[in-house]
Amino acid sequence: MSDLDIRPAAHADIPAIVAMLADDPLGAQRESPDDLTPYTAAFERLTGDPHQHLVVAVRGERVVGTLQLTIIPGLSRRGASRSIIEAVRIHTDERGGGLGTQLIEWAISESRRRGCQLVQLTSDATRTDAHRFYKRLGFEASHVGFKMTL
Image (cartoon, rainbow, N blue to C red):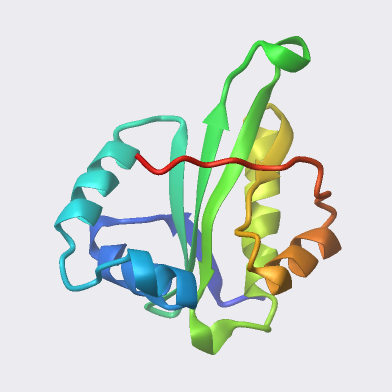
């Protein structure tokens, strides 16, 4: 039996989630754990949208992982819905123990349960360890992504 619970994120989880987002070289450049105001506003938008699912992995009373799952209805692929996995983070102390696999497997299962025919994710080009991880779980590097900062 696992002592891990994957559940919807609560308002009280925001500091732990933001700390995990900031705890890597990329996140350290773009996150601001000292001011939770924008994260609180974003959390309210997320919880108000039925297509957004921000979850946390909790061991005991401690938040040890998080991800966001977005369900997107579409016309392509014969009207298929797809899901996007975003912002996957595992607490430093928990890395390498299978928690990331459990979170991704949860997201895939939840995507199926919600009728999605495709699950996709993006990963920064510099995150080569993450790329190996996603490939090991059955994801294929099938597209080239583009972004524009506004």
